[in-house]
Image (cartoon, rainbow, N blue to C red):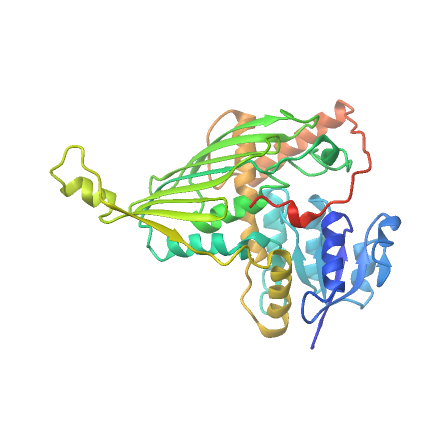
Length: 388
């Protein structure tokens, strides 16, 4: 095989964007040969290739080797399992599933197929050179043991028009959550990718605080890691201009990432060692001010698609293996579970318990007969929509 023939299911904003990039030749050796969407009018967005009104028909057509799933969230699991069982290579948009139990079902369908099929997730911010540099500093031991992490990521501002652009948006039945399941899977993935998973977590989630929606649009979470380090994660779709500030306190000093700058105030002597050995009651370690360069934000979606293609054709290591997507989903689920029960939670959570509670939220919404007015929204340039 010299090229990968890919089909896209779901021609909303993201699916259409991926289709346009592939058709424009932006991903070497990746050819778009089919698309699918339940809405026949959306197939007209990509008239260059064969269109289907179901993913099943597209997968049975013989036209594709791989599938990119860009549907509403719950379908990621159902279509993903079918595609894996059909022998397809699979790229799934974030989140890989809505909740932990569905993640486990999807990952289970991949077991035993690892040598024959490539299964990846669209965690495009893993290609960002700033986050790659920060992760390297952590993993190399340069920062020393981490004591505290504080990430304020509130530049995900969304308008009422955004939420009114689709009936599935910002509902328990359609998305399974709000900012944590739609915008923040990127940041939650980066969080666990850099720092690992916490062992306990407590969250205050505000539901419909800034918009006429039933899901969360404002979140403040605190957490504890196995080594005793603590973390704070704050996000919202209701703040403008918003903030993206990541601060890490570690033995070797303090690192801050904000406004495309990584600043590192490095202790000449690690803080713990200095505290134990100094005779000065009010002494502090001497520091160096270090500015750490990074080569931009990387290739984002197209780089992930290129990596997916290279993994299929050349065996290249994946930037974002889909099974790792369970971690960001569990962080989101844990925050919602803590808010619903008004109690701290211990990770890993009981996935089936969370699924039951989520289904209860869906049933409660249906009982109230909540209907969302859907209006046409202006075209979206998704290259400008990611919180950097």
